[in-house]
Image (cartoon, rainbow, N blue to C red):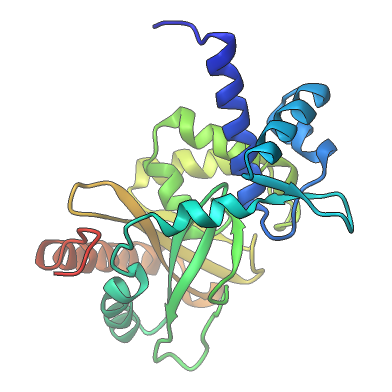
Length: 260
């Protein structure tokens, strides 16, 4: 494999910074944090940010000097062909699972180094564990939907995402990058994700991945319940039911990225 040239390495580093800024938009990131998280030396980080600012991809907010996405990013987004809304496409599946299993379900999509909850469905059990709200962002892997996605990625890609978020994980029940990678390995072997007491104490989530018509991972689907209701035997039963219903839905209505 050819080694990256200095020019391609600069492009890769600039893209890394852009992804970090996008993952923390609109809150923004400081120069020091960008350098520390990316592993790029501070002077180089500053130089790359200056180039991104010149191209309109990044801007520095005057009030706190944090870096946020620039106006040209919005222009680029407008040129993308709008795919079918994932939350509407998969909402019938969430409703079916919540109705049959009784607990709340959540649909999350990857967004930079995070997952973004785009919709959820309420179950019939009297106590609902509403672990995350629609619009909530969190580091990928701290919830069961994101953990399921990490487990289905190639190991280097999953590790890169986990390491990029290492400095944020302790906010979620003291989770560490080492512990999260162990959960990824367990989920990969199991075929579905189980995680509890990190994002929300006393709640256990079960997660699976959803794929498009080309078998690419596009989202994570999870169900959450109070710990006393989600003992190991029920975890296995719930996971199998979710996998079966998701597979049937995929066969009957594969997501193609556009409305039929």
